Image 1 (cartoon, helix red, strand yellow):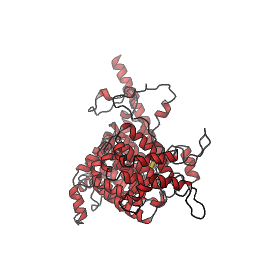
Image 2 (cartoon, one colour):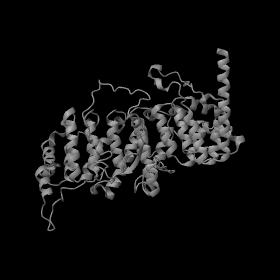
Image 3 (cartoon, one colour):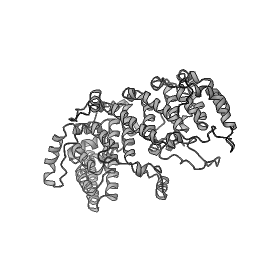
Length: 539
């Protein structure tokens, strides 16, 4: 099978790009690439060389983008068994594996650059990523290109996103009792794609509350964690590391800066004036570039803390393995001051780092400080308010809350109005921004911040509006036909109560927890009284 795979891949070497854009042949090429790259480093170089010059076109193609993702992911993975050295004797003679490689790719490896020198894997990979770099801004908003760009950024950062609840590599399969490798589980296993679905066929909706066996599995929320790549030895050099870091910085700048700002950065403009909201903020809410920006921020935060997070993976140690079995995820890495992740956050929020925001704990001056701080950061307040109500922008804002340092987290609460009861009530009442509030409560850092949040929430809970079982979103801009009928009659804001109680129990004080419980009791009493009053009127 392996010999036939290499022979087949060699026969279509000059037609890789064209065949990758066909529906049926693209799936077959992905299968050939996965098998060949699993057992040969030479096959990786041949595939990259065969697709050289076509990466931008493939990235923007419906079928070619899948092949591009598979190729990029497979060429960086460590081979399970390298045929280049398989079967070689002690005296250095050629073994059976190397003979297969020579027969299949010998002529192609010699003619890759038109000469006798065979290019290395790291030079071909960097050449591929350099080919994508000038078009990073366009690929970021492309429905297909954004996925290829995410894979490229993961390779440059040396980190991949894996399912938090997937079986770990090295575990045994319960059915076959075989050891599960990274080629059998995770992103590499996902390259084994089936037939593409017809766009005209719509997926049937499952009945709400159905008793099927797969209902529980489909309702599980997908969560990803970051894990270092198990890269092949050719990509572990210090030279490749430096080149990839430089290329990653360039791609981040191309995506997060406008053309004029890129020019100013290139000539080292000393003014560094904060620009008003524009194209980057629009990309934050775009269905393609929004998730890409979330991934960029997580990658940069991870690289900033790679000494603590990047060596052994997200689940290492006895306590971490126990938490994984219980479904407890590892903490998200936080960036530090002066890092590349902080620069990206400042660009996203149009934040001026040269302006110091007040952080006074005196309650008598709290309102005055909030007004002054909003005036000092004229754009950030509106951007936070706008992102919180947008489905994709809210996820980006939640990521910022998870990854930012403690001091900036408190400043975000001030600028965003999360310490103001009226503004907080708007957040809670909205169908999207209430999830941002839940993330804020989960990521609260110290007792002082928790006491401010509890004080703000108590007034909202006491009036009973979020405890009403028939509470509906006050935002009527959405089409009622698009709403899920099963959600009617359910309380959509109890998650905030649960997160607030959990926050007080784990990080806050007993006094804060007692205040919230008393406010909850008064809220239920107010809800019951209003319900009885309505029943009397109807009677």
